[in-house]
Amino acid sequence: ASLGTGCDLGEDHEKQYVGFATLPNQVHRKSVKKGFDFTLMVAGESGLGKSTLVNSLFLTDLYKDRKLLNAEERINQTVEIVKHTVDIEEKGVKLKLTIVDTPGFGDAVNNTECWKPITDYIDQQFEQYFRDESGLNRKNIQDNRVHCCLYFISPFGHGLRPVDVEFMKALHEKVNIVPLIAKADCLIPSEIRKLKERIREEIDKFGIKVYQFPECDSDEDEEFKQQDRELKESAPFAVIGSNTVVEAKGQRVRGRLYPWGIVEGKCSAWKLAL
Image (cartoon, rainbow, N blue to C red; front, side, top):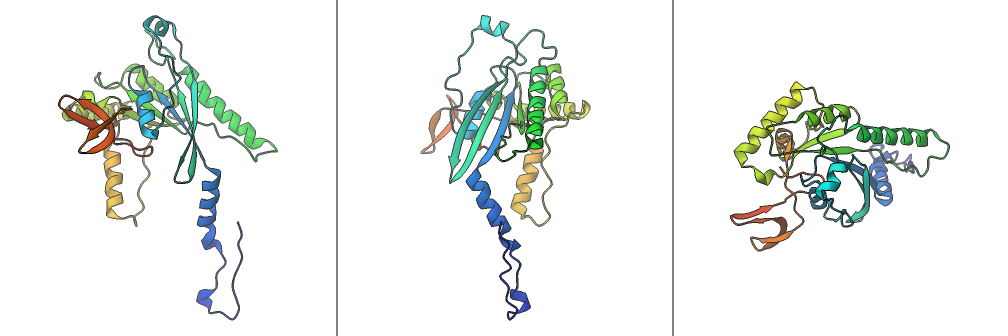
C-alpha cells in the first residue's frame, strides 16, 4: 500500500494528511481482486437435508455427481471425509467455497468414536497450514482449515442424542460449531420453540461451546442491533432447505409446496433461515 504524504507546508494544518485514510479502500480492492476462501463442514446423520440446505444457501449444485447408497451399502459404510469445491462469483467478488461432507456419520448401530476421522481431518488441516506458514515460500498458501461446522440435529427427537453431545464436545475447541434443527417444516412453531429451549438447556448442561455472535458496537443503528438480538435469541437455528423453484404471490422462489401452502426457503449464505 502506498502512504504518500500529499501535504504542502503552505496549506492549512487541517488539510494536511498522511494518507492512511485510503488504507481501507486499498485493502478492500486487494481482497476483492484476490477473492476469499471459505471452508464449511456439514455433519449429521443421513436424511436430514444437509446437501439440500447447502445447495439452497449458495444457490448451486455441489452434489450433482453423488451416488445414493442403498440400505445394505449404508450399513457397511464407515465415516468418510468428502470435499466439494466450487468457485462462486457475485457482483465481482470471488469466493472459493469448499464443503467438507461427512457421509456415514451417526448412521451405524454402534457410533462409538465415529467423530474420530473428523477430528483427525481438522487437526491435519491445522498442521498443514502451520507447516506452510513456517516455510520459506508463503506466497501461495492455500488455507484448507475448516472455518465453520454446521451440525444438523434431528427434529424427530427430544433434544440432543449422546452422539450429538460427544461430537460437539470433541470439536468445540477446534472449529466454530453452529447447531441447526434440520427439516424444521416437520414441526409446528410451538414444537420448534420447545425443542430449541431443550437444546439450549442441554448445551449449557454439558458445557458445549457453540459459536457466539460478537457483541454489537454501541454506535450501530437500532435496526442492526435488533437483528443481532433476534439472531442470538434464535439459536439453535431451525432451517428449511429446498432445491425446487415454486411460485408464491406471483414470484418464483425456492421453497416446498404442500397441499396447505408454500414454505419459502428464505436463506442466504450468511444469514440462515430462522
